[in-house]
Length: 137
Image 1 (cartoon, rainbow, N blue to C red):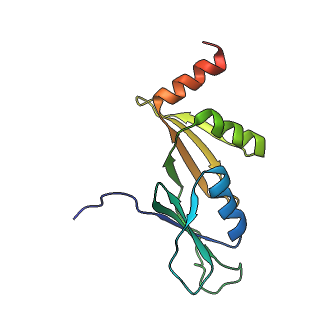
Image 2: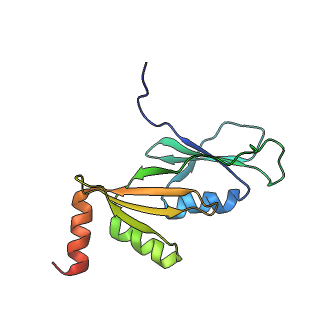
């Protein structure tokens, strides 16, 4: 058996409310059904799939791993490039962009309130349309 798709990312946070707000209001995920675990948290959905699981912890929780996570970033396929950039700029959220060589996919990198790096990927067609709009071409 081989992996078929990324199911979800699980983030442990001492800032549950801020992280949930970031992923719903900035990234565009929706809070949805979550099993009745005996600890605080939320499941955030994208197109009916729970893709980000949040677990609320206090900074002094004994069960937080002693080593830092080794994940560099995780990514979402996205649409609505101009509105997304406006949202980031309106909220004062710093971001960086890059283009995937040979693919034209526009990547926008930003950080959530806990410092996790999030990548938002926009299609080559949308990136080109946005560039033409910005340059008046």
